[in-house]
Length: 335
Image (cartoon, rainbow, N blue to C red; front, side):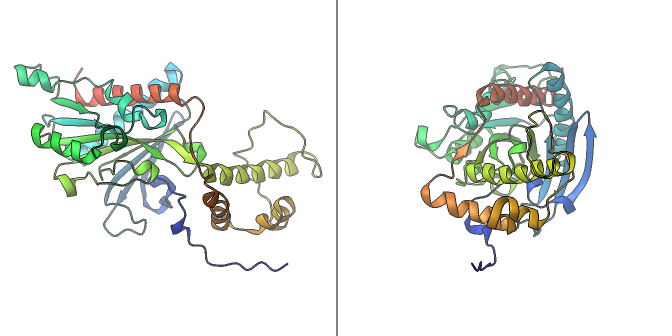
């Protein structure tokens, strides 16, 4: 049997990620640090970069857990530090009026991060309209424009109308994102001053919100809450290779013995091409991009490249909304 290989063009496949850290950006990382197992990467992009991303600053916070109070507080502390960094990089003044926009769909749990976040924001604009306000509190308003399927109105049209009437000095937009690695689902926060495109998490780009389009700074904060089925299949193949590699080195080489409680993900071992072919047949001889292409060629035509999330998504979204809300309150207002 003869296999003819061809140049892989992943542009026609929807294996995408909203996370800058997943887009071959290692050469652009200006600073990285780890604080109690929480990793922060800072990337600065100039115009016409090879990543084809907007010019500006990108901060990625990677963590493992926020479901218990100790981990929640540790991530919150790092989040506050990085929010202050992006404010400084964006020249946000202490007296600047802020509009926080919770993008997404409150009726769809994976897409409700914006809604859950704005519920936790301390709102003060109406108090400024009524009279004197303690200067510890910034002028802050919130907006939940919802999605066109629920309102019949594009999110951007709603936002532009509110901006015209309330004249904020800067905007913070909260949205759910997509990832191309299941390890990052609900465990990564991306902060950028490059703006946002509502609906981009599912490839539905209907209008950019950025300093280029609305003439005021737009800080976007997002957390990946979904991946496609093709990403899960691709990652599972990689995990299978890692697990078999780990067993070959540490257990019987001719038998895959059960080891349910062993974390093999950090193991450095890998299989040779010949071993991969023995394990996976023809698929084992493909490189990373070719495997991705094959998975999409299998799933897309039959409509099975689904957008999926985790089973505990409702609980995690509530925690993430509280985390982002608390972090924003801390840096927007003086306590």
